[in-house]
Length: 411
Image 1 (cartoon, rainbow, N blue to C red):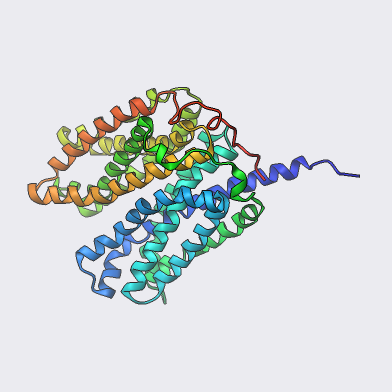
Image 2 (cartoon, rainbow, N blue to C red):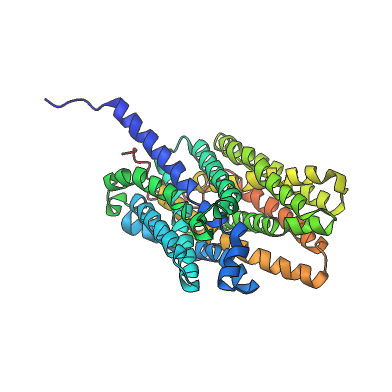
């Protein structure tokens, strides 16, 4: 006699998958953000030039740009669950290679870490769309906040851990492999139960995504937003130092900016998923960014905390909204993966080039004012792109292939 399915077991499986998403998100920035505070120690050990030190911090972003184009194809070959499983294994390999003495191992391990994280960057939004189609906002907000929180923790504890008795910078970085092993242990059973990729019935092509005007709007919305974020993160303390603030105060302003971004990172996806059009959110986020950068250019120093808070709120809103649009503007999980790959590839390329190009602009002008003017102009462009990206439509035409449901139940 066949037994009936156990509803409680199915509910447990759903929760385990959601927890797996959050553990993966926790690993998507910590291994990278922990490097910045230790860059002086690492450069001192290996006698790295300023150019090589800069390359070490931008290498993961360049790896994101390359692998984001390949990740959808990898998912179609191995399945998204197995692809993320392999990315977690590659992430751990990269962490251990980076800890091996030698400059070659340092850069090789860093590149492997970037390639591994890029796969999760691209595929997590598509899995959320497939397995949790009615909770896209909740899951996107949750993983966005988790990613940001662990990124902040990793950068904050890097130096204290490296200063522990018997420890050094390599051990401080390697400690995050423990988080990777936890994510791997939780994700492994789910990935092994997943159906083979051949059973997914994927339709369409990656090339078709590049022919969609809406896909390009979303791509540049994410890309230019990412550029403003990484430029601001890279140079904000220096901007405040030029205004007469101490280095410690400049670093504090950067921390505040990232802290105030957390509420909008969580709540904007929740609101976006309940709206047919996200244009009102686009306008609110864009206006907040424009006000913040206008304040930085023309406002008094006494209100600097307000300008930074506005910029932080807008950064949290725009990145989480961009991630949510991957699910809301596509018809199935395969399409979401392709849009995510396209947007993140171009987005992280702009993110990697932005600090370098605008840093050069500062050197030529001997002032941060032109850089802030560029960030203000880019924020206006981001707002204009969002007005199209936020409208209720899809990146593909409505046809029988594309509208086929691919929201398979969680296994």
